Image (cartoon, rainbow, N blue to C red; front, side, top):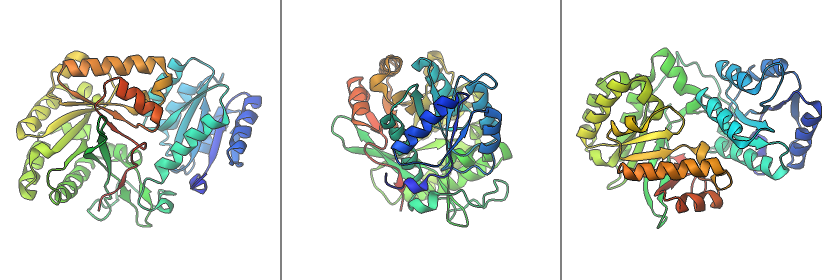
Length: 384
């Protein structure tokens, strides 16, 4: 398995010693022999949160008597675990999907889910996904560690900011119609720091506006070098508390001579609930500038159809937790089809995030989704 050496600590937490050895055997079948096994979730938690890194990997059973899997994931998220997570259970897929959604909202890097008993091929698919995430930096070896990173003192500038872009593909003709700008930071030792490691830190310590200023300036300066190419980028919910962000984006568009119609601002669904009135005002002002608006990670928050109609969105991005293995999950099929139908009724185009397999692509095409992005077509790559 290419780049398998980039995986660091592999851990499995399950109260059943027999199943722990089953997990160990499956890892050995795919060429991974050093797996830390914990039947005591408390000991497993203590081990996991010590110096965790992005390329760590943990498998967590949901049904444990002392600490159930949901409580375990909460504690893991609260402790700031930086590694990647796979949830496993003997319960039906809907329980697994809920656990995956909860973990993501706890800012954990969720790879996917496994139903007991699983095959080596299923495990191998999720390990491949972990490796794909790790090697998405320009230099794979540079992604192996977070390096020296202090969110309070880290210098945010156009040198430490390393944006990458991922193509968005028209599903009918497979032409590139634009790119999403994804943020990365580079530590002094050259290691790559990922958004799930720093965005929440900057939101908590009040530096998210500082970060967004650098991100928007750097991105729009690069956009100016490309004619007639559209780009999209995310706006943090903390910046939706201030109308200042609209004036700053307007000023940057003018400074670099970028047509507003080429820029799509993505707003996460959670923002609609936490800052409803202010978010409505800012979203409408951004549309008045001429920018397009997308609702990002749809399905992970708690917005209602009524709230969707109160925002001038032109695009709806379906979160990858529903796209992953959608061809074999009946609940996901229902959600995707109903979401596409609703979006079309509201005059919004739909984007499937995280399409990684031919089977997923075939289903989202059949469901009527118009645009896809994901590893099936391209991993994010450094924006020169």
